[in-house]
Image 1 (spheres, rainbow, N blue to C red):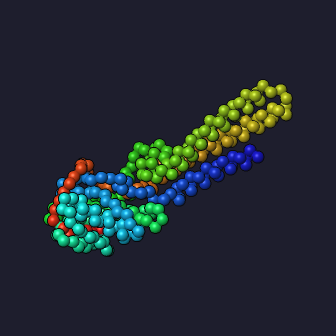
Image 2: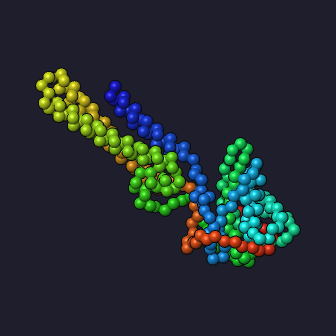
Image 3: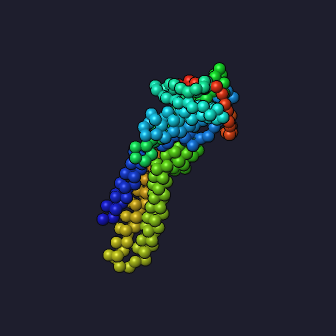
Length: 262
């Protein structure tokens, strides 16, 4: 019976971690909560749109780029996105040179969609785009040596919780089983009844086995955590340097050139 409990615990722990690791969904990009990033020749910003279809929501998000570049004009501009390019119609002409760096789509409610666009827009249409990289790769970090921390940093919350729970469960198992082993051994040392003495020794040996299994499991979870932290990809984020987040208002003339960048 005791061996069944031991094996069940080990199996349950392995299934928990495997399920969390193998079935972890790609987290939402970190950039979706970003504001305006001011570079030398361009802005990197997040615009959103909601609609009854993905295309409708994307068109509304693209329209936000025009609106943010002409806040005071009050013009009636319509924007449509198709194959990574945008066409505009309206009673004024506005030139906005921008490109989509990344896109994230989520379903909201019944039949509704929200589209997030990470857009880089030139401050002047004649400027050249600075290099901005969107990646799901992360550099090595000392967080990898603390179970779950690198997973949290990468946006993999469920997986991070699984590694923390797994490691804590193993350490708790080590402490409890060693305490019980010592208790059984101490009782066996002073027990005079031969049958009870044998039972106590047997229980002490069982707890020693449990302790050893927990030690092995703790080591396995720890190594698994490090490997996972090093090799798995996380939430997409923007890589660039010397950025500043500022509020802004800008106006210009109309029309929009927009292309996808991967």
